[in-house]
Image (tube, rainbow, N blue to C red; front, side, top):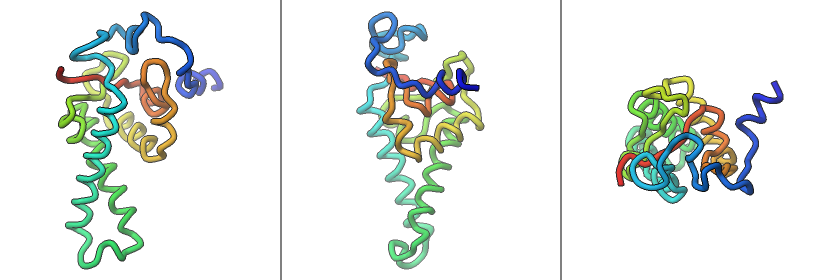
Length: 154
């Protein structure tokens, strides 16, 4: 079991990626469509998805939602649904689509499916996994779900 955990938890940001650029070992191009998405695009996509979840939570939470102690949990739950379901089915959430990125499986599957999308989304909610990135720009959440975030347009 130890080797399984090391296979996705080891953050090797100090080591240069194989082939000289992020994604080379997965056969991805250095630039353009299908290249590894930048951290900036990923952060913007996350912010857009979070703002959308926040807006929907405001709409459905009734009068004075900001005074409710459950409001932040509502936002989190809505964000998880808005992220996991579209990523499982289409490979991208609304925010990802807006900035031109998508989640790709490293095992060549067309989509990552529900279990892997839920695992990935829950780990993103924990904050630390996306920050511990390897040389290919994959956080612990991507390593655990066997995914990589790539550009879907130039």
